Image (cartoon, rainbow, N blue to C red; front, side):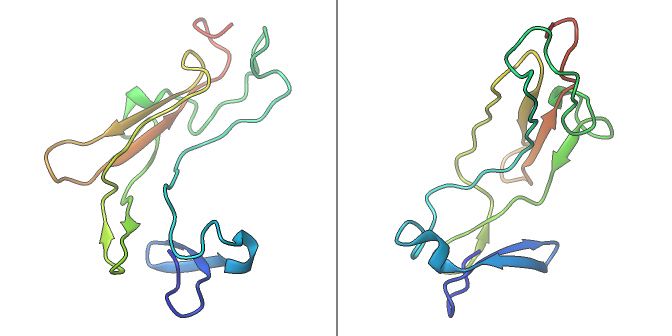
Length: 129
């Protein structure tokens, strides 16, 4: 979130401020607001997009579709609007560079309920040689 006094960008988890990025790092790009936010996981290996693929897992190593108690997830996702009110993200999409190796799933159990983002995968597997 952006501090309305200093314009610095803060990372907050469970109402605990973990740190900030000075607004001067971003020039005019994030002077007063951001246009999007991203959550998820990332795997780096020199073997990504090669065969055999890396065996490096993302998250718990389970695909996103395995959901709670198995897959890695992020809950309590919020963005802050211009009035400094926390809200659920309005438009959410999922993306994976390699769907056979890693996946992402935006889970919303019902209208106006807490969104949860699941992500992960095992890397190399029968679908991802």
